[in-house]
Length: 187
Image (cartoon, rainbow, N blue to C red; front, side):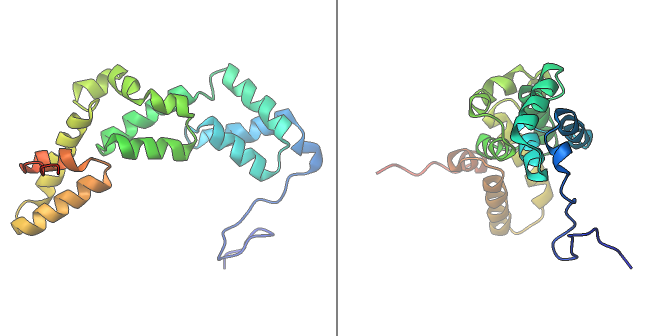
């Protein structure tokens, strides 16, 4: 039989008990908690701040702890974004629209999201694999998805390919081009 921590329930997951007030105001305690979050993988500054504040740390202590981590380059939104892009695109090529949405959701600052194209072009691994441009990512994704849907009824294949490409954040015009369709004339 599984025992739940105090305050947790089977339906809502377990929540850590609130931290004592003496630790909540401690910059060192906030820094240690942030380091534990970072052990699980790279995080954005906003993710760390939100997590620490939600755990009950005082915002001033959180701010000082985050500044210390930033100074020693353990918390770097630019490095996070580069690593995130390389991982995401290597695993599954996707469109700019979807990448922007994911970065914003993770708390990447707007100014850094605006540099997305430059960050993609600066990554030699992505350039070598033609993943730095929207068209290159679309062609790679289309080739992967085409292989997976080969042997299907042509109408079903077309529907599945179109849906999958749209879910990956690619624009209609680019999908139509890859499907060999002529763009619809504008009125």
